[in-house]
Length: 84
Image 1 (cartoon, rainbow, N blue to C red):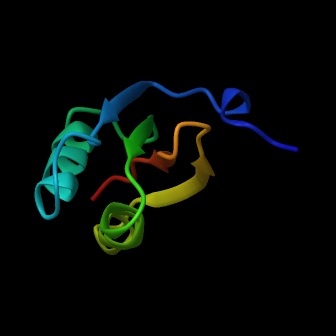
Image 2: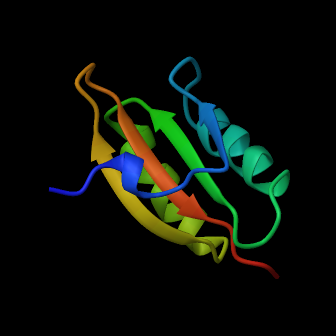
């Protein structure tokens, strides 16, 4: 079984303390701070964030690498930044 440690993550952001649409805004800002090709780990709650954040990031043109469920009920989304 693959786990998050197999992907080298360049930065992480925790958006479990905010609600939509701020979840996507925080994730987008974190992605903008990375260089093209770098990997961002986004920790988020179940529900709207898991449904909306990956879709919105994909619509922005970035690559979703993985979505893992964590033991504490949150999820970690692994995203590769794709240049414009």
